[in-house]
Length: 160
Image (tube, rainbow, N blue to C red; front, side):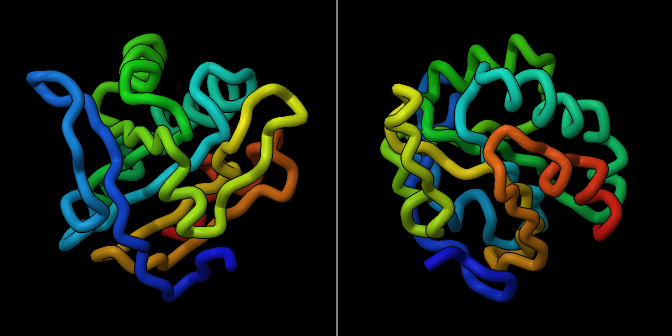
């Protein structure tokens, strides 16, 4: 079942790029006591994610953070090394990148999709959400994976 507004995020472990290399961070480590915009994308460097989705959050980072949001985080079913390269390529400093390499978070939230028809394997659906202390307060889920109208930064800004 897909996670809904009012639900708590499931407990999983992400990988993040730390000062000494990859580090494990749990859902609690990342969301407990914080107000976080979480953006889910099917894949780093994929056309819609790289050209249309992430750039809006980079461009509107300061405005989003000025609305009482503690952090913006992006998650994808990619490894931490790919996400780190994508962060650098996208000039996304100040945005957290959470590697869900085994799709554990995507599956646990029901936000996973099957990309095998495109040679991508299991992936995350495209969405944005506002999470407050681990509870989903807003969820914008795209029905069509290549679209970014519902889950883009501009749409999220209208409700936070």
